[in-house]
Amino acid sequence: MDVLSNIQERLAFISTDPIDWKSLVISFSWSVWAFESYLLIRQYPLYSKEAPPPQLAAHFTPEVFAKSQRYGRDKARFSIVSGFFSQTLDWMLIQYGAQAWAWEAAGKLLHAVGYTGSLEIPQSIFFATILTLMSAIPNLPFSAYNNFVLEEKHGFNKMTPLLFITDTLKGWFIGFVIGAPFLAGFLWIVRWAGDRFIPWLMGFMVSFQMIMVVLYPLVIQPLFNKLSPLPQDELRTRIEALASRLSFPLKHLYVIDGSKRSAHSNAYFYGLPWSKHIVIYDTLIKKTKPEEIEAVLAHELGHWHYSHPSKLLVISQLHLWAIFSVFPPFLRSAPLLRSFGFPADVTANPPILVAFLLFQMVLTPVEAVVGMLMNAVSRRFEWEADRFALELGENDVNQAAGMPDMGERLGNALVGLHVENLSTVWVDKLYSTYHHSHPTLTERLKAMEDYRVRKAKKNPKKEL
Image (tube, rainbow, N blue to C red):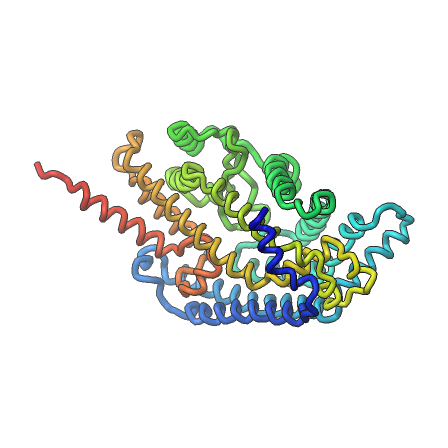
């Protein structure tokens, strides 16, 4: 508590000094947008290259590589336009007092329906809903364009207009059904615990995450996709043998109808520590050999073996602790709310959610840096998971004679996924550092080859 007291004492000026927070937030927001646009400008010329990197030349035909480059160019152009629109919209909402208006509108709406109880929690829920819709609705045309023009042009979109509409409405509905009680719990804990809210709030956040791990596959995902048991075939046999070998607590193996919306492929696992479920996209099964899918899942189980999800959870909790530790001076800051146009009766006792939202805006550049650092951690975990699959292949006594080892199969699968998804293979280093949670394909293949070379030097074959 002494640490927290020192932090908040040093930041006490935030509660009293007449700082022009609105101008600072606007400058922060445009600065992050400018930096991200600069990174995109650095990346864009690479889409004009006429041949893939030398180490990938054997895997990409000229026709496929040209398609990949066109897809990358089109996505970059779309990102520039949609990013500028979103940034301009955010600026307008801040500049013209949308936050203060939304708070007032939420209060009037409650009065209109005859609500007479304590106002802060229901008004905060309506406030968050109004702001979300003010941002989401103007961006709908860009979402539709992305699906029905850009993705359609390159052969990936499988979504119908009706499915797009129902997905959007269901997403908003689920967001409200889950978000409203979450916000209510968040606000109640902060108000109830006072200056000692941090441990209680962090406990609440962890509990909420665990509940969502259970509810998502049972309640939410079936509203969008159908999960079916993976048939009894070679792929299922391979995966079950792999899970048994690693003592992975596999409970269910599912195939998901990802082709209902897109031709892109993926696979993942989820669940509680003692009960895990593996989900494979039907598009991946159709396009990839069973032994290569096994190698992809060996990589995924490497994340489990090294406790990467748990480590990321710990890191996220430390991140939350840092945010919550700095928040109290902003919670008591009348100048913060006044800067964004809130009236005196609101600034005299700042609503928790309003103060937290504005506080998050102030943190925009900090969160951009944190995101880049988290990507660095994620990339390190990806290296470790790749190495796990390579090491697993070395000890695979069940491998059929003449079959490529696990590392080679993983490399083939990664290349195949990049080819099928028309993924970019020329990537600017700074762009990748900021945006990518995974190493590039060339980096991963080179790391695998370097690993094999090191192992060969350590264990040279004895001549007979």
